[in-house]
Length: 276
Image (tube, rainbow, N blue to C red):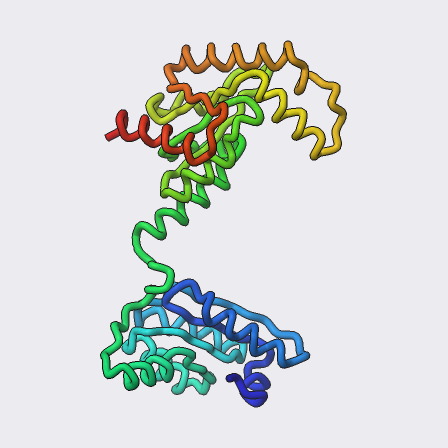
């Protein structure tokens, strides 16, 4: 536990250093800080795996007179931090070292000393993070100038589950963008730069789309009387969408009655069949 003397030296700032996300150490620090009434700041340095990364962390801690709380299972990296901090008078707290040693003694076993086991840090993990960030940046027609970097692009009229499907696919590691078809406007020219095999047109039946849009307006407390929920206008939108999909040679997926997971599975089946 952090002592009052350490917290006073830390000048109300705590730096968490971890070989993983830092969530474990952050939770511990926050629990301790509930015992104090003073204001404080927290900074987290996650994914610290190499001794060469230690210096910049201690530079930050020394500059702000902070306390360093670390959860590093690699003994070399932890040792480098302790030595660097000690040489500069930066106070540290090792959250895992003593516990790992005690458990090893109790089990009569040698610990693995593999960083990031709790969160499974790997190339695949970071690919998923990148994919999610990409999906957020390219949601609903945003950042069209970099849409060409997408693995998958979803196109459809409003309320065809483009955003939830994009996020689901991103969680699977696929950089996904989505672009709306807006009544009265031509499809974005950026879509012409995308390999048609990577673009999927989403369609839904007329009755379902009307229900989805009416419910959306109720949530927004908007007037239900508009072309957005006009039956004839909606039918026209759907016919136009099918025409665009056909002309662009985009694969069409009907989301009617399908859960996001089912639609995603269909998208990936078609994607892998064409791309790989």
